[in-house]
Length: 340
Image 1: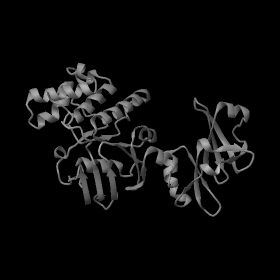
Image 2 (image 1 turned 90 degrees about the horizontal axis):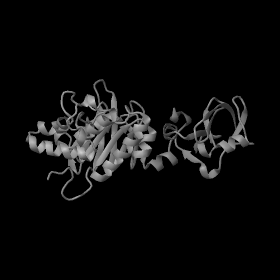
Image 3 (image 1 turned 180 degrees about the vertical axis):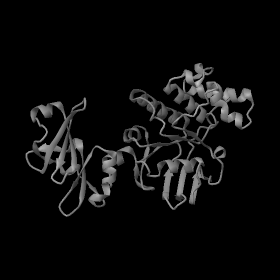
Image 4 (image 1 turned 90 degrees about the vertical axis):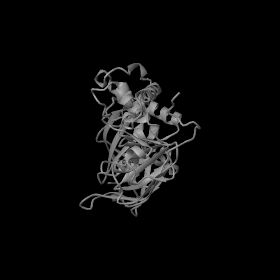
């Protein structure tokens, strides 16, 4: 019987970028001296704004781009120069890229066909991959006969059929509606744990990274701004850029120019403190988000429960003060300009 898993279960997909730089024609640097280690069998999200280098990093790992300098290792093998099909990686594209004229089964089996695998053997492996993603009953259908979520499962099965050590995902959830996105997120995490391979997932969504990742790598201008567990990045941001990009924080400039971050849910409206003006109040379903502006035009936010807002109502234009507990302060590196 064929299987997608190795005979002896063992986590695969240990990745190392060693001083990797990617410079395009004209001198533009997309990835700048990147040093990154990814533990075998982990779920990693490359996160950041457009142009930060996260997609180029994924393409370098896939073999769709070559580094200008540096080494890339997968399970201790230098893969720079190897064609994509020989790297032990598989890519799941944002558009799914299914062949409209092929059945679901033949779409999943296509890469095996290109490798010269006999029809019976490749169909057996394709059926197994479809069983894994609970799509085997749709094997005879064409892609146009499937929903968006079903097409994504087929694309996932096609990526997994070659038994890769690492699955690369390029914004895989962006085309899904919010309800389906949450469900597929949970399925991706389950697949990754069952297969014990590394998933490297590019996203611009902080919520996606926080929900999925064992390791979040937040990039900026081709470099790593901060990496660690989701809790590390959200609760212990090191710079104003991290605090603002991850969201859920207020960044305050103190006398002398130092910066601190305080979570919005731990910033409170008080009788005395930093002067601010209420700009708006929005209902969030679990409470209220109060938007405020500082004396120099800074933007802040405070999260209040329904009971707290009823006890101390606020309205746009009202002058208030912001305060926080010392235990909730996170000192930040860099000047106030670093977060813009």
